[in-house]
Image 1 (cartoon, rainbow over the protein chains, first blue to last red):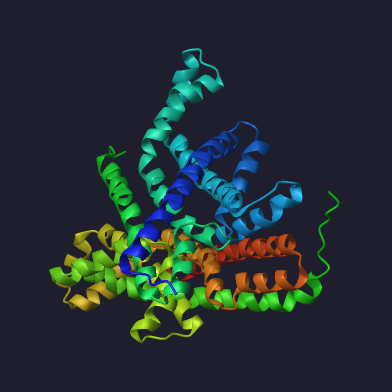
Image 2 (image 1 turned 180 degrees about the horizontal axis):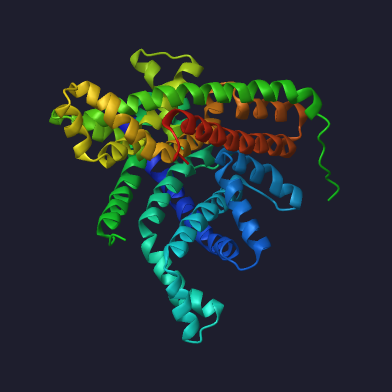
Length: 215
Length: 222
C-alpha cells in the first residue's frame, strides 16, 4: 500500500485544481458568449424573442444545476454527440452561466436612462450600433460587481461536475480520501483551496461595489 | 438515431417521486426556519459591542460563502466522524444546509437591520422599551419587511442546491431520480421529469412565501 503524506495529498489536490480553474474559465467565457445572445433575445423588440429569453433564464435559474448537468450528460448523446464528463461539464456550466449573466446584464441595460437610446438614435445609429457603442459598454461597466460575484458562484459550482465524473478538485479529493481515509484533512484542504480561489474575487467584487458611483 | 422518449415507467414511479419531493420540502422547511433564526442571532452578534464575537461571525460568513456547498456537506458527513462526531445523513444534510443558508441570510438580515433608521430605536427607547423589546418588536419586523424578497430568493436557491445532498444518500428528490434511472435505464427522461418537478417546486415555494409574507408582514411585500 502506498503511504500518502500530507504533502502528497496537498500536491495531488493542487494538480487537480488546474482543472477546476480551466473549467471555470471555459464556462465563464462560453457563458458570456451564449449569455450575450440570450441578452439580445431578452431585450429584443419582438415579444416572442423576449418571452424565449425570459423562459430560458427562468428555466436555468429555477432548476438545480446538478439536474442540468445530468440532462447534459445523458441528453447530448441522444442528439448524436459523443459525450465525456469534460464536455458535459463544460456545456452544462456554460448554459448555466449564460442564464445568470444574461439576467445580470439585462438589469444593467434596463438601469440605463431611456435618453441613452434616444441620443444614440438621434446620432443616426441603428439598433445594433446603439447596442454596441452606447448601451452595452455602459451596461457592462455598471454590472461588473455582480458579474465578479457570479464568477465566485461559478467557481464553486464546478465542484458539482465531480458527480458526473469530471476529474476536478473534489473528485480527486474523493479518490484520495478513499485511499487515505483522512476525510477531515482532505476535505478541509479542498475547502481551503476553494477559499483561496474565491476570496480574492469576493473582495474584488466588494471593492468594485464600493467604488461604483451611487445612482 | 432511433431513440425515442419513453415515459411509461412514470406511472409506477409516481409514488417514489412524490416521496422524494416531500423529503426535499421537509429539508428546506427545516433549513429555512433554523437558518433564519440563527442568522438573526448572528446578524445581531455581528453588530454587537464584543469585538471577538463580531469577528468570529465575519469569519464564519466568509468561509461558508467562499467554499462550495458540496465540499461543506462532505466535510460534515465524512470529515466530522474522524473527530468523533457521527451524523445521520438527514441530520448532516440539514446541518450543512442550515450552516450554508445562515451565512448568506446573515448578510441579508444585517443589511435589513442597517436599513432601519436609527430614530426608530431611539424613539422606542424613549418610550421606555427595553433593549431586547426594541430589537424584537420595533427593529426586526421593519428589517424583515425590507429584506423579504431577498430571503425568498435565498430559500429558493437553497432548495435547488439541496439536490446535492443526494450524494450522501438522503432520499430526497434527486436521490429518487438516481435510483429510478438505475432501475428503468431511462436516464434522460427521469432527470427531465425530476427537473420539471424542481422547477414547479421553486415556483410554488416562491408563491407560497410571497403570499405568507404579505399576510404576516403586511402589504408591500413582493
